[in-house]
Image 1 (cartoon, rainbow, N blue to C red):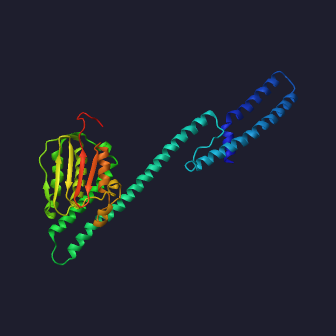
Image 2 (image 1 turned 30 degrees about the horizontal axis):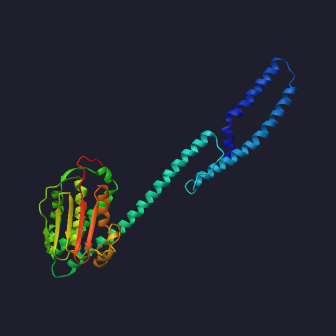
Image 3 (image 1 turned 90 degrees about the horizontal axis):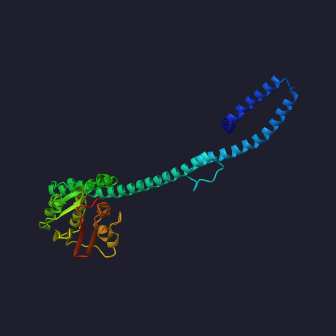
Length: 329
């Protein structure tokens, strides 16, 4: 019944013309005093012819309407919009519908991928942040007086993990947040060193950080975040020795440690999300998120990163910060 009403509505103009034309014909026959019998037969023949066209037209209309209704119900499950018998406006509408469907499908897939990415990230992050929280609980339950320094170190780890997740959330809109300006590379690194100073003292590690005057075009906040993560990794895997930070005349920032190093088979995968490698599995506190985030941020800053390492001797990280000071990106 719904389709039949739609058929009548879409052909309303034609249906309205029939009684108007019939009325005109009757009026003319009346004015000229013509017999009405031929008019009756003419109307009868026209009615039969009209029905011969209307009935097939209705069934064609019904078939097209059913296909459109099916398309509405299965718009996103169909691989492609099937060709439908349609008028020029309907064909244009179907073309626009197909384009919008493809865009929505892409956005849906992207949204699902982001959601899965977020779920995986938070799953790893929760496991990571549980470690210092458990350590704090054990220290407080030891019954021998809280070790203030140990508590501070574990709280610092929690703070770092919170900063990491905030950085991950903000990374989605990082392009809109970028503020490129000429900055002192030494001041950026000094901020990170100052934050990790208690870690150097607690772990009894030496720091080699000579003065350098390099000016680089970058986003200070995001580059600081990346440097902090690199320094955090160096501290995590260096049990004794020295961490050296330097910058040459080509604006290559180098962070070198004398820590455990990275095995050659792990090096190609260190920037993968969730990859911990041999050292991470041994340490049991690594989530494989730090270097992944660092690489994502440095890519958006157009800053190449290179890591070389020798197991048992240490790791060297290089950031290539040189670029034309007038460059816009």
